[in-house]
Image 1 (spheres, rainbow, N blue to C red):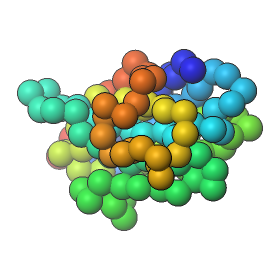
Image 2 (tube, rainbow, N blue to C red):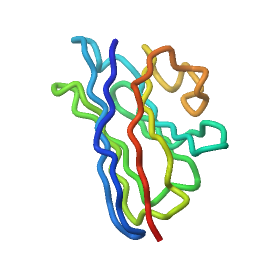
Image 3 (tube, rainbow, N blue to C red):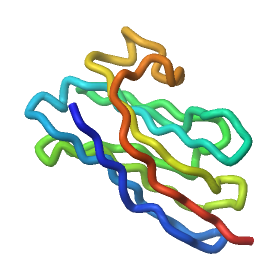
Image 4 (cartoon, rainbow, N blue to C red):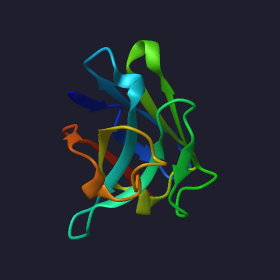
Length: 126
């Protein structure tokens, strides 16, 4: 599966962005998808994940209540709605996919995912 992340940009603190992760292939609904981010000089960190149907969701504590991950399988797309953005959310955001369910894999672990998109930059100004 090939992934393309988009939707990043520059936003003021308190603002919102919606990231999209578009996938090729007709079996995307069978993949779990995660979002990760990496700021300069820092390690890649887990942001959110959504399992294959029925689509259970998982969030890092730092984004819980502010970010929402969702998927529309007939559009082969996973979204990350980011609200109440903070300067510390500034990073390059990546989407990743693995065939299967988050009940089978550690969806918070970046090493779980064999397929990655190219990243989209999110910059939050104070």
